[in-house]
Length: 396
Image (cartoon, rainbow, N blue to C red):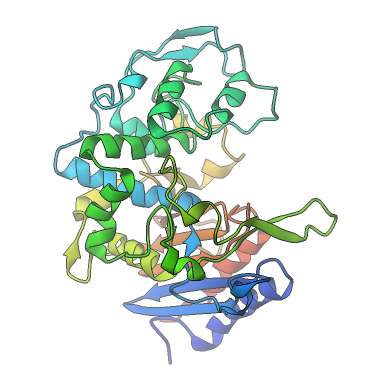
């Protein structure tokens, strides 16, 4: 007998892995969501916290998690709705809505002084924001080694308008369209959405994506009455054992609306809400009779948009783009290299140990959620094991 195309006996291996990570003290609890052929299997273990009130509250389908960079696909989907109603066009310059980015300059040397620049070859377009090729983004570097990295890192604690003003005063790292860079594009997409709709980003997401789909627990902060469902976030301390210490408690930064709703990583959600969103994508933009995107829009969003040349100079994790691409706000697997996701699968992970794939070839959605800083890094061996456990359980 199978459950939604999974072997019940083999699904126990998923739970065994979850319990192993809880038992080791890595996290107090985890949730896995597997959906296939219309059936949903939720596996949860542990609690919301190691200590305090959350230490007695079990992880569940309605536990609230900081989604980190898994915010990016939701923001990109909202932008797609603006393309569909012709408020935005992919190849239009963003100058009209984001005048701070007009007339940009570009560093002559990406690691060189900020004053040594050349003019940008062209304007930044909406497409550049959605596929991450606008010319600036996250630069992994030791402080004091690359001037532009230090300047970008200093853009914190600002309102959206002040952030984009200061960003526009800096040069781009590369020419628009030259290469893919991470994160900043998603933040700019959020600002673009807010200005295009005339609404705060959270309101725009609710009006166009979350509200129609019934994702009532998804937003940029947690209402006071729901704080008890927010899992505590942890990080490692500096001891040799790397003991987990509190990084953000339930009454921390997500207990109140942010100064700047960050489209690249500021959303909170639940396993059930996020499954609703991913299910809508897997079914071509429609879920439970509600259509939020057209099938062609979903196809465009979940297709690799990067050229070989853009990947070759991306500077992201070495070898990452050998088997991966990037659509709009999410990664796309271009070939199968492990027992896990098939070619054509798409999804993304988050800073606090959240990760998701839709696999159209297997009619599968798989979501894992925990709350520990840096745990979303898909290079960690634990992730290979988790994806392997999902795929070895397929039975049809």
